[in-house]
Image (spheres, rainbow, N blue to C red):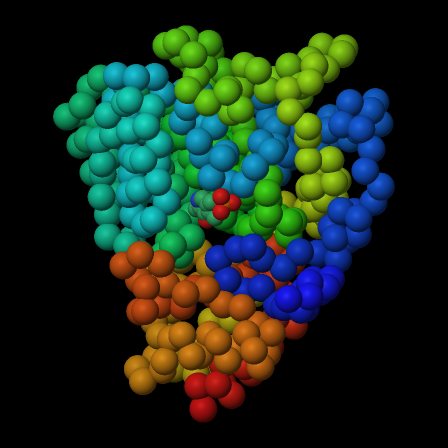
Length: 372
Ligand SMILES: *Cc1c(COP(=O)(O)O)cnc(C)c1O
């Protein structure tokens, strides 16, 4: 076998992530690597923090990017805030809520599950009942935008409820950040994590996180050593915000952070409200195209995510074959159904740079041709 250079095709990414990366971000990624303790790089990291605070709409001092994908952001929140023996309420209305349960259990804590049907938002009254039944609960964890189903939950109401019961919140905002309103301070969310490759138009591999002062206080009372050395934020903070001089913790993914800086700058230049608006408008355009093809949405309009369109696979269409033809003939990737929706749904993403008219036109034409 002769191995030659790998030259990836130019695809259009309209699945659940990674989504299309902006050319500006790819260009930033290819700039010369400098040392991760170089004063110029440290200055850029400070700007990444400030840009992330804008994206999250927070003044939280502890706002950084974890050097690993969204799943590591999830784990960062759990391992630093959950001690063995704690009780955590975990809302599960799709794949990612179940991963939260895994995290809680691996911390040696008890996960009290609040289940809702796939495609439904988290039911706030069920969470209230669980809080009343489990008065020793210290944390409520939920997914804001469930990428596996396309449903948006009411983060503001869930946070208010958790506060009434003196609980912190851990919030999965991997798909919501940059795509739908997410107001960390106004809604008083405590530990929020996201991902670079969904609505931020950046490459995969980084996980923005933000912790409220309350969450930072809780971390300090963590029982014993945090089980993960790499994700122990008391160690990482010395690198992201060491006063004056920064200490080495791990080698930062220098070029990926250039990329994140550029993608966040793009978001700031567009304006957060305008980005939310663009996602909504592109969703409306896609919806009109899909409905013209007789394709139906799985999630009720009231809590449907604009950036992740879960639709029923039309009768008679061969799931795998359609997606394969879209990829091979149109260089277009859409997402398959996940978990209980496997074989029943397609997930069409309109995330970040992918949320634009050219993509919708391509997707509509390709689906029309392939479905005949
Ligand atoms: C994609 C996603 C994750 C995981 O992020 P990775 O970057 O794939 O590790 C977690 N939660 C939600 C809601 C997601 O959409």
